[in-house]
Figure 1 (cartoon, rainbow over the protein chains, first blue to last red):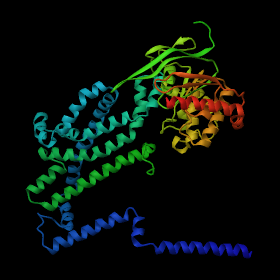
Figure 2 (figure 1 turned 135 degrees about the horizontal axis):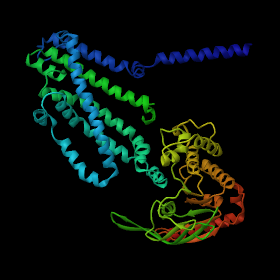
Figure 3 (figure 1 turned 90 degrees about the vertical axis):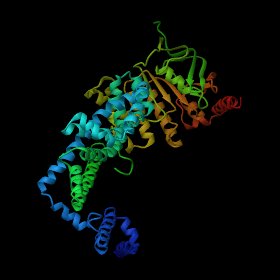
Figure 4 (figure 1 turned 180 degrees about the vertical axis):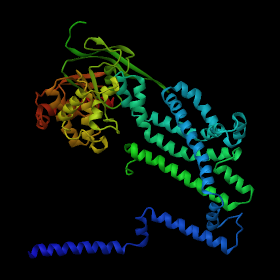
Amino acid sequence: MTVSETQGTAAVKTASTQDRQERRLPISEKLLRMPIVLPLITFVLILIVWEAGTRLFAVPSFVLPAPSRILGGFESVTAGRWFEHIWATLRVALVGYAVSFVISLPIAVGLAKSRLLSGAFYPLLVVIQSVPVVAVAPIIIVVLGTGDAPRVVITFMISFFPLVVSMTTGLAATPPELIELSRSLRAPSFREITQIRLPYATPYIFSGMKISITLSVIGAVVSEFVAAEKGIGYFIQFSTSMFKLPQAWAGLVILVIMSLVLFQLVSLLQRVFFPWSLPKGQK
Amino acid sequence: MALTNNAISFSSVGQTFLTGSGSVTALDGVTVTIAQHEFVAVLGPSGCGKSTLLRLTAGLMKPSKGTVSVFGKEVTMPRDDVGIVFQKPTLLPWANIEDNVVFPVRHKYGRVTADDRAQARTIIETVGLKGFEKRLPSELSGGMQQRVGIARALFLNPDILLMDEPFSALDALTRDAMGFELLRLWQASPKTVLFITHSIPEAALLADRILVLSERPGRIIADLQVPTARPRDESALRTPEMQDFSAELRSLLIRKEAA
């Protein structure tokens, strides 16, 4: 009885020592253990400094509007109008992204499988990538006319290259032993792609997809700068031309949120459907 | 085809590779026959063309000179009755153990039957991994992963098993255990085994016969029968005749490296 009691108190004692040690941790250590709280505090602090600074030094809102003014900028347009603008940009970004993916995949398979194709087309792809899309955008608009088509093409031109590169790298990263296994089985060549190379490329494809999704938003906005009557890019340009800067900043905030959400959706897709493709420690 | 009990035969085989800086002769004048159900280890320094020997037998490459035959028929392409175990297990990281073992069938024919799955489970049990069928490769140790690699090679029930330094990536204790495991599998279901290694004790413990290859260009400089009868265990390596045998092998390898 006494033995178990002493053991019991000993256990309580160690637990409370642990508690005390936990409490004795320096505040910086505690903050490091809260992965969301730390950046949130930074963000709020920046907002406070921003707000105080613009008020204190009476910065004109066309130079830098205070966060509270930007918040007001959201109210200058009805929710319905916001939704229309967001949908216009989102639609072009997503369709352009999908087109990029669908076109990149066969190109990457060709580049990875055939050195001849790779030699013939890779330099061409680099040339396309090197063309400043912003400069070509007006030409594309003239050629393809109004509607979503030219905007989708511009978005594609901005977002496809990281996809092609990451897919090609991934398809070539398959262990050579598995390719030998495939050859030793005399399996059809397309199954080497679908059952070995493509799944092996998944982590690479996803890193390309994460880069491309934010580029797609940029592509959609760039195309709206050139010619559009709707969309967040158009809205920002329209607002600045009217010197309604808080309103333009509100559009910018929407774009940032849109990019973040899309990026997180791609990450989520990988976590849910391809958990084995995540780097170690992120599962 | 004449009926023959020669499983594998090399007749004055030479292999030359073209590289960026000229040509490299990996094998030169290799002539050897391996009988059915014989366990042959190929011992040699790294880069001596041991793996080339294996890939020629598998039909993954064609010899520059001479001919390679399997069961009396010249090898011109990969055969169905040959299984390969690689140095690294190279499993599919997204597929569970059972799916990895049935992969050859899925890959070759595009579909997997219930019978295939039942057979895969039997083989998984044979290699001592019962209960791990639904685990992913990343959840298994290196030794267990290589057991899956062996199970995958055995799945199509090949007559010839080609093993390319299969245990060299494992720690010493696991390596010994895997060697005995392989002997058990081989005795339960005899196959012709071509076992590439650079470990003298491993070769001496496992094989009936040892081919020693010289440095590049690889030539067979010795073709020796292992003097100890089966079954062997760890103590077999400590008998005087095996000690002498290992010393002989070592001197063959060292002489080559000095030359």
